[in-house]
Image (tube, rainbow, N blue to C red):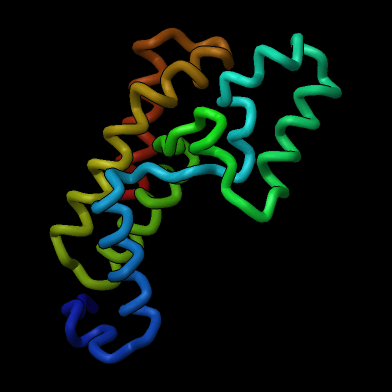
Length: 143
């Protein structure tokens, strides 16, 4: 049974929260800081590729009560993992409501992921053509 967005959760607190989250994501172009993005800083050069110093940098950025990222050159970025979760979430919303906008949003997230995940899939021994086909097969099963 397909229900409309209004019928599904018209006054639901969770629905309002999802709407605010989606608005924030769109306003920020799906970019944000990540708890483990400390090594994206130019200060990484000062770690001299030593595991200990990289861990120190990572943990200082992660555990600091203040957001040091802008001060040390880390910019918000789009996360492949986050886009995967967003695509799955939009696919669930589409199945719940039947709203084509959610279907399109899920496709957009997964389409963004295909070139991004292709590099990671290629590490597993697949060539570029195989990785794109694999990603498209997975997407078609979800949607």
